[in-house]
Amino acid sequence: QVQLVESGGGLVQAGGSLTLSCAASGNIFRINDMAWYRQAPAKQREWVASIPRGGTTNYANSVKGRFTISRDNAKSTVYLQMNRLKPEDTAVYYCNADMTRTDFGGQYNYWGQGTQVTVSS
Image 1 (cartoon, rainbow, N blue to C red):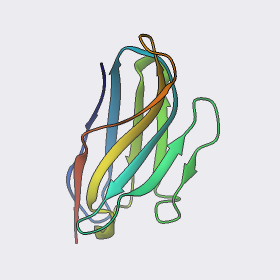
Image 2 (image 1 turned 30 degrees about the vertical axis):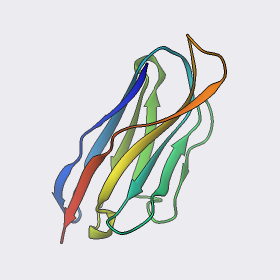
Image 3 (image 1 turned 180 degrees about the vertical axis):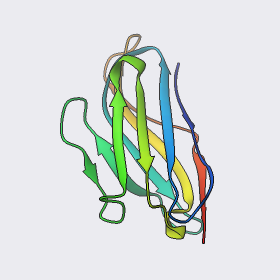
Image 4 (image 1 turned 90 degrees about the vertical axis):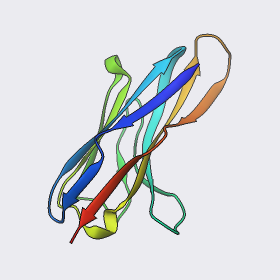
């Protein structure tokens, strides 16, 4: 069994900051790519940022310069520091991870349950 659990969402005023966390647990051998996505009401889920295990981070143009993705491999956790938040950042934020497991071969992709971020104007 593998779980991704997000935390850190909430209500914030425009211009404020929030930090999201996503902790992976279970029969994990190695976590490879980790990423954050978001889904606003009546919109499709969109990619926000990603971080390979040992490579370069990447960001959607809409958040570049305001959001920072990072990870702590020892804690199997990925973070999203969000600064200068805008009302259009309001969405449910989901973490995503590619990993290999200790109990089954192959690579698997998992999603967290999501955490709500609401930015008021």
